[in-house]
Length: 295
Image 1 (cartoon, rainbow, N blue to C red):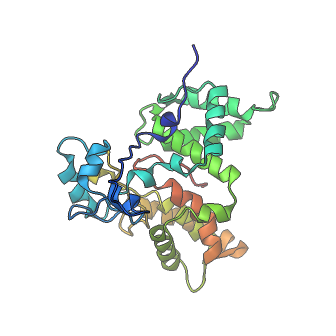
Image 2: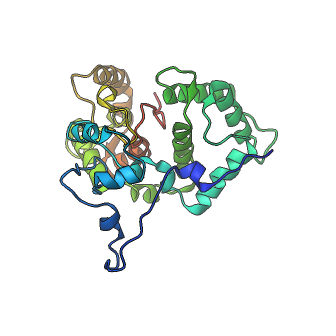
Image 3: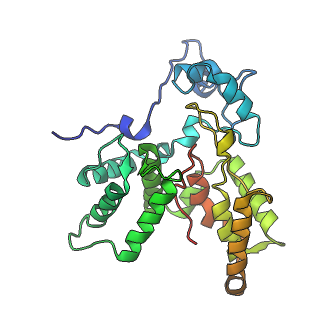
């Protein structure tokens, strides 16, 4: 029996509510995303939500609204389901391409994947269109490292949403020019990227090592503070100087700095282009690193 695929398998729960007949043209956004005193600032975009709307759409259950509200006013912040669903960045054609790949590689939708499943998928995906092609030993090791990044709690499997986000990002990298990816960033994401660039650099450029360090910094998430609810909680931004991750990152950067400083410095436009996919990867509410930076 074949596996049934649908857009629902790829995008998750999206429910729309009809407007009243008296609504003015173009008011869908403000009506479906009602502003209220509850609505905290979204970490990534400028959308605001009424808790009742989120509850009707299934993104708040039980008594979690107060918990989400409290977390939303902390450094952790929160991001809406539109920002956290990276699959919504895909066009219909890109979505079809991804679905076709999953079907040909016999990936079962809405199921978690073990390391064996993931490596088998990687091998099968590499052979698409060329049956003699296979992953090299180095590529297989890289795939295993990515699996580990997608399974930070070492449970032995990766969840379907994490796998789907990762594959969506890879597809965006393959099919979209960088200028197209840059247009996906929100104003807030650009502002955070600019602040990171200025904090790490001196003048109008930063070293290549600092640029790589920034790629790791997007994935700093305050997991201990995240509430157990379905509304997305995430943190995207520079690692605090006092955090263990910051110390580790800085020690890595120091090891790379002498040679890389001599090779290249990066200006602001280049920095943004080289970080754009990692900024997008840091959106989902998950401890997983959806696109593991090199190094």
